[in-house]
Length: 514
Image 1 (cartoon, rainbow, N blue to C red):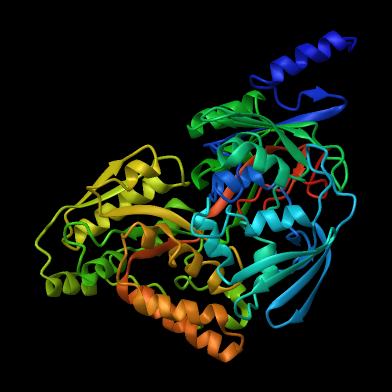
Image 2 (image 1 turned 30 degrees about the vertical axis):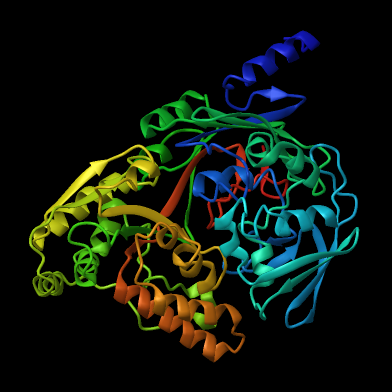
């Protein structure tokens, strides 16, 4: 068929409502991805979730980048230039960065130091009335950011921070456009975000789809896809059917039991990675029967995690030694483990005087891979030690956290290769669990965490981490299940590599088409 202006317009109209996989516009494919859920906003420091960062990673850039492609451990521990070309420690509490020249935002504005200062030090992330209080915990040591000239910035911390460079390369480090943010406000910016990333927002329809267009002036090169469409397809069977029918090019959140059949399909490739993330159960100490930490500890001891990994994950997932990962390097605490001890669980329940109070476990069926199946098995494990457990299926986190439930589920990501980037961010003073008062017995944990933030001596840092983890495991506001494996299925002509994070890197160096 002859390609005319009219056919281009028709194609654009079709693409806006759900494209045929790998449809062509301007000679480059449109990449359509079937996901279980799309985020309601693209404000990058507001949608701090697996569904959010999957999309925002392509819209925004950070000053420093985590190099997942060449890091020897595959976990992105190697740092490389991003929007900053170089950085220098000029003192124990100061870091100076030289900014990349010639970078454009999606609205045509030139990227300058003013945008960096606005991103970190406006009321957006700091101050008594900060718009994004959760983001504060990612930069808890930050005292201020100064523009030394249009292409130089200085970060100042209130105490020496050995992780500042990693913070700037991770969550909440995405740079926003000052002019657009001031004009649109937090809600408007979330609907019409302006970043410097390889793709810019075209359409955001909550519960339906997000459409991104290639930003051909991207500083790392022209993106491989002309457009990217994230289509919300909550049901797994529907996602698989859409891939097989050619309506999408890639699907996410595939449980292991579906992998063998997908691998048999011609033209389809399955890719997987063990995530730098753990699925956890969260315990609300205000719930009936939950005030005594011995009951909460019993809930963790009654779970056979190895059985869950073998039966639900076909051994593709991993059981870590608690909130404690080898990627921490010298900070890793050897010799610890998550125990399965049903007899000890029964003893603790008896000592606590547990009287058979109903313990309600709420979960969403599709948000986390295997969440519902795991919940069904765990409830039976609890019943086996004498816990009166009941499973309730809900639609969202608001319903999960509403009154009447003692147990929910969540995931904790290792955002930095250090305990401060996982356990502390997930459970520290800025977390939902402390601000929402589901966990109040926090003094020992918080004291150790705050000291760890300011400590630079390796031996003392490791001792403080030990104290922090001991406090968390003793008080048991939750329990770790496993590190999940994330499975993706894609058409073989889509050359793309998954990372140990939910970041879906569609930058030119990680996405191409045969």
